[in-house]
Image (tube, rainbow, N blue to C red; front, top):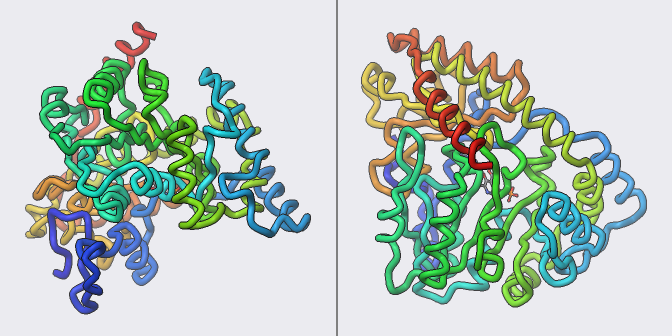
Length: 431
Ligand SMILES: Cc1ncc(COP(=O)(O)O)c(C=O)c1O
């Protein structure tokens, strides 16, 4: 095995890394490594969270029109005015009034750049930043680039909630910010009102910035998505990040945005200017068309994703993998303890390698998703923004793998779904 564990990185043993201190802790993205393995073994790729179905026709038509119309040169650094206006208007329609497109919105190259630019622009060297554990794999490297350090706050199975005392206990003298993903990748949590209120109180009490990655804001199955920026005292300290990538099935277009009050936006724009200059001009034009699609589009998409989620959950149960039904986003974290035991795999990293090579399904090992050493050793993440046929094929292969290992089917989702429904009831009563 070449994959070490308890780390967010895969170190390639055959290719030593350059010795620049800033990137010494970097390895390769495990998710993109799994995608390469999927290509090599002609596997179904449930590792990387990108759709395998077309983007909406009007959005593609707008991109084509923009290129035909020769919108090919640099956009205004902080974003084409039409797109910034469309972003402010879209949030305004959802009850977030008062976003000033001139000063509060910066268009960047995807949510990834927005988070990295926020870290580089707003954190001094030596800062500590609270992150939920597990976390999206780009956060720790972004913090390292900024000379900052991620401090994990565990989310606990089975409901992936955090302990309020653990959250408060993680704050130290160097804590400057908190990164929140909501809906959360990889757990699928949609954080409740009381959880967001607790996070907001912590930020206010300790004068922390909040960088919120809300790239799955439209992909919600249970509960209700709320913006942390709208909690009392949060507007002035929050950078809200989202993107076209997931909501419109255009992860390759590299258009995202950050919404923040002018002083924070000004700082972030300086970084963005010298990092990437501007996001792709024709795709910014297409972004205006995308944001005009409205609620009906998002409701339909969430409905489709819910059906795909349930299809995958049924297949996982049949393949002996206990998965918790996500409340949002498009990933399932599944427990593969029986597979590890039956196959003699040391952990999910070893199992994931076997799975892609031997059975043709690529997943992300849980070891790559947690900062806490040892966490995620029996979990794998599967992405379901795929055609039904893709998920059915993956399901057949996972079931065949379970049979090969002698792992029995598990009836696994009842408890989690009951918990989900109970929570939904509580949310409904509060709303
Ligand atoms: C939580 C989260 N943030 C950011 C990204 C990347 O976003 P983008 O492609 O817009 O940079 C992903 C992609 O999987 C993600 O899951």
